[in-house]
Length: 297
Image (cartoon, rainbow, N blue to C red; front, side, top):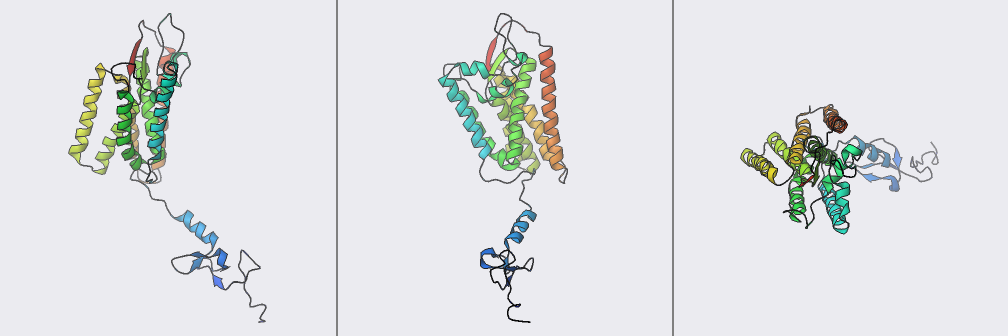
């Protein structure tokens, strides 16, 4: 063997002489391609392949673990932006609040007149300081609850599952308002927050939280549901509670194998379809009754 034939070069940079092999693929690598490994060095390609093969840590419910509750921050931000828009232009509330239909003599508006977006947009609006007994405390209480409960639920579910839970809970609350009180104008995130409350209770039972504390929390939630019947839209609260409970039961008790994500997603899609069907049926058969009320969720 000649001296020239004994020269080895990097497999990624053929013009660079190299005498170090990748400990994984055994190919020669130059200093710019070397990456520190537990033993020796690896090439860039082997390092990337190793990263793809490492399973990411998951929560008990299958979500990706994240240290920062980004979705909760975004949801709070959207609610605050919606509130500022209401303060700047009061017509925003009547244009985007949850309303099924209006009695005769009013301009046609509401979900029954094709404005289905109200099922969701109303959940990002709140009573302004000049409205009702709540005023600014309406958004303050809701955002405080979202901050306290939302961060815990998001940490356990992961961002995608948490967002699906929140939005489906909000929709569940709006749909129940449409079914039971279609002429009631409602605003507020309480339906979604009641869904998060149901999630916290179910997760606590599933993960073995202190049972007394979890039961007390749920009891307080139910007491507020009853009390709210005289002050706010209890339909929105109950709808959010039922929708959030349904979604979280699927999250908590789906089989812990390759079917888990499919089952969880399937239940969320099935619930969305059910809410859409209930909305369509109610819209098609909506009998408008006289009188127009207002409420908060």
